[in-house]
Image: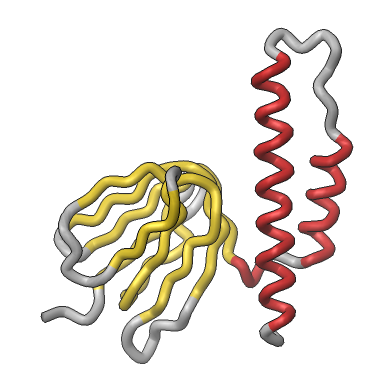
Length: 145
C-alpha cells in the first residue's frame, strides 16, 4: 500500500507546490476534508481557509497555505488543487495581514452601488480572508517559525 501521493497546488498566476504528501487537509466549501494515499476519486469545491500539507519522504516538509475558492481533484493517487488564490503561510507577515485587515475594515459600500448585497459580500469576504491570514501569521510566530 502506498504511503504517499502527489499534490500540486496551482493558481491562475503560478504553480505554488508540487511534492509528495502523506496527508492533506483542504478547506472545502462546506467544511474541512482530509486526503490520504489511495483515496477514492473525488472532486470538491474549495472554500476559503488553510490547506495543510504533510510532506512525505526525505524531501517533504509540512507546509500550510491560505487558499480561496477553486476545486480539488483526487484521481489515481494524484491530488490537484486549483485555487483562485493561494499564499504560502511562510510568506504572510503579521504586519501585512494587519494592514490588509485594516484596509478591509475601512471599506464601505458605495451609496450608488448597483448591487449593495454583492458589494457587502465582497467586503465581508475580504475581511474574513485578512483575518485568516492574520491568524496564520500569528500561529507561525507562536511556534517560533
